[in-house]
Image (cartoon, rainbow, N blue to C red; front, top):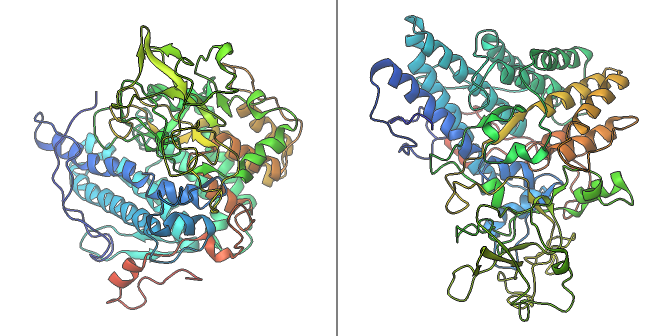
Length: 580
């Protein structure tokens, strides 16, 4: 159980005063124990760490990264759900404007988080200077967290905010200056920050990992609209920092891929940095679990509101990368990262010929709440799950709950209430392609057993940096430096480490940049990395479903118009990104 703390904090102004949408801070935690400096230290850490989960919320930064890529698409479902002013449609088609609310909410939550790290730094600095070693350790973490958050800002908007006092106006940095600033911040703490508080706290390994990410993407950050120049010096740094992590002996690959995204993942030795969500706070959310899944599906039969939302589906283009890789073999039969079947459907029930929700009353199997687990990975076809009776209660049986083929109860299509949810590969913005059943779905994270509603109180840490990425970053750096053999060995280390369950992905015989790009997609789908990887590998201007725009200006998002307007009293301070 995490320590609970009370904090009251006024969000410090990050720039002027225009970026903070709300000065009334929500109490994330509470504790009536502890006084003095110890309480000040934990009170400084909590709002900064706690805000990171809101940055990565599905309708903030996570949604912006996923929907802008070729990985996920969110149509106006059935003409009734998920229009939200067209923000998801525009984000996916790369027709974003500075008033897009998805861009605005991601920016606001991220700048608020940076502001909270500065507030923490201002509290912790005098304590550290007076010799409080705990405060000094916390200070190093907050500087590392500020650098990480500024790297997210640089990645998406091409700028960072340098600010050392809440009384100052931030200095806006771009390009090499921004890279130098983030790097200097990380290097200032890497040799003194803790080595043993991962994954819920920033550690030396996390700082090394962020330094590797920064240098891997530095060519893009220097010239976000041009052709990246991946220098040997940058790649050497990537290799150095990833070597440090690998040689530390602190981490190992998880034999079961989906254990990385389960309730007890806090202790998984592959996690380097994650949002600590062990079921205490309402803000500990499950949105990465349920956002993509069918709204007619309940993931936990003991919780009547544990349904999906019919949010994003996988684009046919991203699915095709799996098909192209494995040819005549179904990806589920070739790669354990693609799918894990948890539901124990009796073979005699698998055939649904002639059945529908109108005549399948006896076509179910029974499972207790403790035994029931929904399938994981990429969900296709007809899923199975608990079903509700006309009064809204789940159908039960002697062993627990009846598990049926999922009945379509959402939308206004001809399948509503009379057919099963049958997930199809094609999903787009047409009337047919936007129906509630279209698109294969992401089921990477489990439904937490501590969450009563699939929304909050999750015990599953949200993974932000893990050991597999260290190997693939090193592989890319080696490959760009001409060491194809070294790159191949690192890629195969990742592929062949998932030994807990068949099919174990087979080792590759060769690797090039196209294959490595594909491997990043297979390993890290639904983790918010695809857009960044597409840009670095030169695929962000490619066409994909409902996206034909090839303008390199769209590699960066527009600065929200509200931010531009708020800074208008300082001419030239905050200039809009190119093309908007």
